[in-house]
Length: 57
Image 1 (cartoon, rainbow, N blue to C red):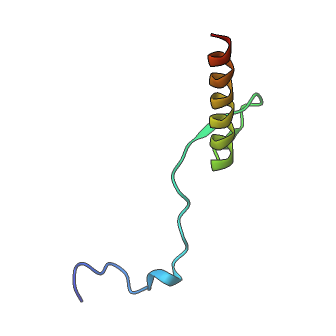
Image 2 (cartoon, rainbow, N blue to C red; image 1 turned 45 degrees about the vertical axis):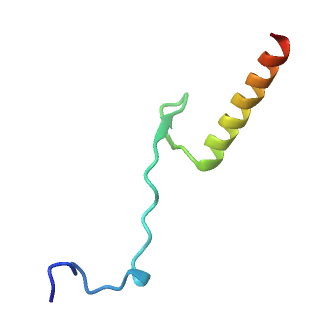
């Protein structure tokens, strides 16, 4: 067995690991995972706010 093969379990049978991200603490002190949907929503709101500022200025 080669040192490059640390496991006999084929990768197709292993459980996929969740992507590392982050979390926030809500008003009740609970840890809430940050989702892709949350990031997309925040980016959309930021883009909309920048559009509004450029129209006013």
